[in-house]
Amino acid sequence: MMRNLRAALKFAALLLWSAALLPGALVSHLPARGRLRRGSWWTRLWGRGAWRLLGGRVEVAGESLPQGGGLVISNHLSYLDILVHAALFGARFAPKIEMKRWPLVGMMTAVCNPVWIDRRHRGRAGEAMREMCDAFAGEVPLLVYPEGTNGDGGELLPFRSTCFAAALVSGTPIRPVLTRYLPAADGTPLPWVGQTGFLPHFWRVLGLKEVVCQVYIMPEVRPDRCGRKELTARLRDMMAEHYRRWNENA
Image: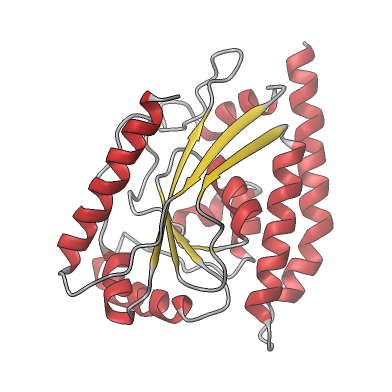
């Protein structure tokens, strides 16, 4: 009973928070000078407020947070990642286009100047790469989840190479980030890999007193003259090894 009441109160608070910020976010989304910078400010504000209302706490270690444009990549565990990374980086995202239909998170992501990825049509990969190159040159980092889907918290999944091809073409430095969640007190699995529907899982998360996310920011990697597949494999292997050691020392 208490858990359901907590979930209901948090859900109502998240709706009110998002509704309160939506007009300003929509205005910042309009084409005008400084649009991306204003959008980043709203993204960070929304993420911090939503994460706090959720009962979230984030612990950051490693290098300093990236400033300005460029490419940030992270492993992907849950829709919760978007709240955490929005709060930390104020980044633009490169989400799959299906996410537009997601309640709350999809709505707010849509007004934060994303680069939508449509994997239903392979012919649009080139268009996505061009949009990424343009995004790298902006004032706001573009955050990409190269696994393309949620992992279960174990080993990293294989990486898709579109963002790395764009980084090579544009000579953009890459900032790898590792993300993990501490186990919930009641055993609720915080990684969301689809065995449970989104709404039932989200309701269970809302019912938790606290959600703790840990983020490790790795040193910047500059793309060299290697090929797209080689760069993709090198970054995935480097992140996977660090992630394995990080989990062993937890």
